[in-house]
Length: 269
Length: 333
Ligand SMILES: Nc1ncnc2c1ncn2[C@@H]1O[C@H](COP(=O)(O)OP(=O)(O)O)[C@@H](O)[C@H]1O
Ligand SMILES: [Mg+2]
Image (cartoon, rainbow over all chains, first blue to last red; front, side, top):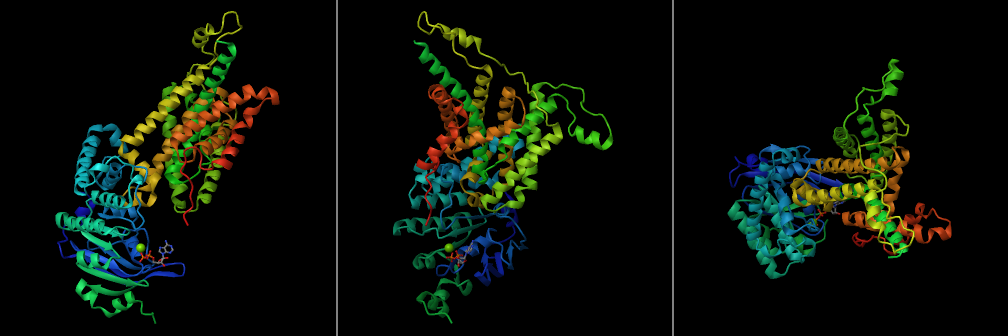
């Protein structure tokens, strides 16, 4: 058990895992997010949708600590979070993928996914040197887990391939694998299906739903394909120009006038 | 074989030895550049500082003795011991590790996410600071470094090769300095150790990950600061090895820090991000400058070794700016 799963151990499925409270974030004059609030419940697939530039990626970057909002609070596992670094947040059980794939291009699929186990590696440099046995045992255990993920994602055939040489769709899958290797409590996916064909999207949707049901992982996903997103998510947040304009089940969002307007391009006041 | 061929072979061999040393210095640059995107101007001074520290510790010199004596009116100079080389080397490694931690704590930590040029400027500052600090700590006089490495011509090689020349020709055997041979072997061992470490340990994997993509590394829970300390430690040890080799050869003095300048053309040839590039680049420059001096040098007045590497680098900058092994630079638009 690592820090993340310990922190979340008393949050039951359906209870609030993460709460975004009144977050505002700007870059110079650009307001990326304005007074956004919503929550993510344990075990759900929570989608964040909205037109380009709406602030979706910025929202994920706030959640995993790349961006620090000027105003507002993030509550995780019932605790208010303050000033944590991204790598510390990773250790609390939040893993992610990126809109523009951020794999370690020169490394093999296996090595990439192994880095995802960083939050489960305890032996440090010194103990590695003195106590080789423990370090080796840990490495073997992690390696076994990673092989399971490789099987799960059906990427056995590219285990040793440097990921920079893989086609785009497979890279996205490896990136998902690296995030899954952390056994995250909360998984953040930034457009995991962008640029994929229908078949690849179906595969990816299946993996995401399997992750939710098999591991009970909570998932926040940004996705543009409305068909897919309505299918796989339990609840959605809709952002437009950095503001929240809708929040609810797929059914509610479909009937939300503000959302319909935003997507049909009704001019803003 | 005619003596000419044998001389040429000797020149190439000596070039390779020199090249290994250049590669060693370049390696220190590449390690830090890959991990943190910093061009560490202080790499050469680190080699000098490590060599001074080694000499100081080995001879039982009291650090900061000038300062202490000036302030307290004492007459401290020596602890009166002479440590075995291996102990002195290990203690120097400890000093370089402390140095790496201090650099991270006092400098790098405050410059996270700054422009590369600012980080570069910081390392220039660091270089000058260390130079002064080293002098203050150990004194600025030229020092003799002797960790018991063999020196002088390898007689075995001379005797072995003397019979290779054609009967009756004036040939006295191949001349290679034993110190150069040792340096080459040590450098090779160091490179192999480093590649095994980076390939087969989890810290090595984390190092490669950070070198590849900072943000992604952070997102999986790797602490950049920890990795930076580790990289600077490794670079410090590499600098020490380079410092010991060059110092044994030509004494520990300020000019030792200038070997870093020779690493620049090596990096331009090999690419700033490639470890094999640093090695091959070093070898090419080492062999290139020795061969050039041997064949063309006499026609144009000699001393070509001073500039050959830079001119070669200039050609590379014009025709292949990414170096031999560097990734092709394509600006994203
Ligand atoms: N690091 C950054 N620096 C400056 N502006 C940024 C940065 N990240 C995002 N933005 C701006 O914030 C706004 C929202 O961007 P983003 O969150 O990427 O939108 P989305 O993911 O919904 O397309 C855009 O106007 C974008 O230019
Ligand atoms: Mg985005």
